[in-house]
Image 1 (tube, rainbow, N blue to C red):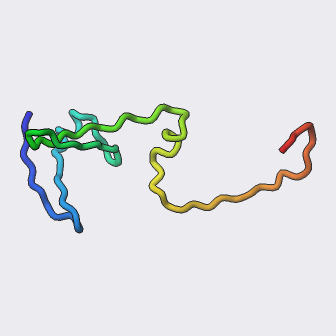
Image 2: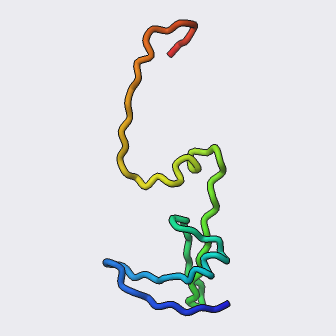
Image 3: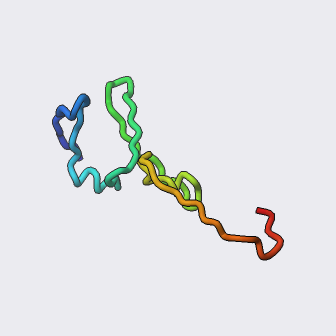
Length: 85
């Protein structure tokens, strides 16, 4: 299936819109990471980045956008066993 699209201005960059049917076939969703390269024939090749393995730091932070967040230290009181921390 070959579809056409137009390159448009997007802020200081250029952007394209991809038809939903193409995205569905490629299983690409919002915020998925895509790698792109240009071959010797000037074809642009998009590759969906693999999903990080569940349980890894990459997986836990896959949706983190770099924004700030607040943390809170909790005082658990005196130790009650043989804790070393």
